[in-house]
Length: 73
Image (cartoon, rainbow, N blue to C red; front, side, top):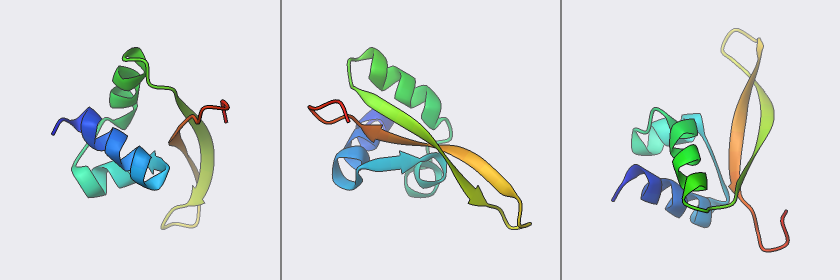
């Protein structure tokens, strides 16, 4: 199974994916590049910037990717 296929399966099963999930679950280090590949193949994937707190108590920002549903949401 390719990295793109793993990402698509994850999106279909869980609804979203982050870089940390891609690294931990699948060893995929360049999620944004694979998302670009999937978009070029016609998949409708959106992203949102979410925030979290790192181990030092600092605010961090990262992308969460989702498949668009048929209504565009």
